Length: 502
Image 1 (cartoon, rainbow, N blue to C red):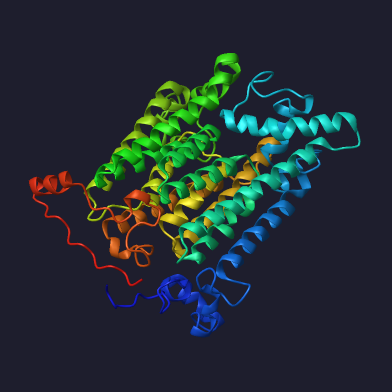
Image 2 (cartoon, rainbow, N blue to C red):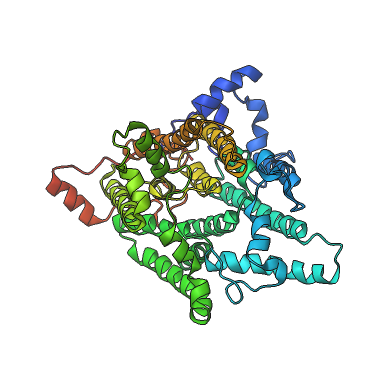
């Protein structure tokens, strides 16, 4: 075992200190006296050995609770459902949770899918019904109750609990790096969008799925990822990185078990409503097939540029033409995402060391959003836990979050302008904000790819020997066929890296 100490790790090799290991945080720490000193390291001792109540994990959990409380306050102007004078836009408090209580017929006691088509995957629809129908039943007997407000607050409580649980999962996956979870806990994106929609349901289930995979329970991981995919589609994309990494590590049995149980979970959740109410169940797929280019996407930016650089007023630019030919737009969008996934797979196989699961998972989900024709404001939450696990470095993360805040403000300006027919900002301001958001996500992808190609720059591997999220992949050697393939390609097998002090 190496005796070399690792910067940012305490002498016992147990905990990372960002004020020592992260250059950005180390620079900022100068304003408050410099990096964390040895006298303060009691905050970061392993569970069971701490002498103080406020350990790093408890501080991070308190921070996420504070963020969620501030989010609730930020949404409070909209909680009564009486949205007059566009308060939902000029106070930045719009939420689908309140709007869809009425739009989905929950205020009339309609059962999702049976009585009303729902625009979301089945588990989200069930979740809406499970919380909304009891509120309607109580409100029917007591007209003094504001049903919409009760429904929102009940959703905020459950979704907030899922956000706290997600932080707990990150802490469990990063016991030596508890401060990484603070990236999620205090993220401006969480503060602004936590209950805009029901995305935290899928995020919480997916987080527990990753935890089950890390604990070498592939069947449980598959069930949880399948349930997450039945709430929002994107968690199913995580099965691709699991499969390609298992192929490289010759651990296909575990990956196929996870994929198989995920498929079973998705089918079982969807089977009854798909058979009994096929038209109402298919509303989600219909909307995704027929929906045109949405605000803030790569394609929306392209449409704006079409109008700026077009020379023939009677001829549609390429992006405007795609918006008028939605089937072709769907094909192009899916093809680009497919090519990106193929690129991630090649990267995973050719990298000098097997990439970590979180790195590939982030790249796949980010690629989906980059090329998607829809990028709703709360979709930022999908990437949040993945980038914390993939690249827990504060500088680029905060740049991305600043871009997301700028987009959030510009987006609400666009909504208010559309509602009043009086533009709040010039269209170019909104497009610039969307471009900054897109650009920072691309930069994060480039930085993750760079650390895959140069694993010595990976902050997590500076603390752990291999992949703490890898489960059966963690510490596994590459499959023999990979070495043979490298020799045929003329690339020698990489030298094994020295173990980090533990």
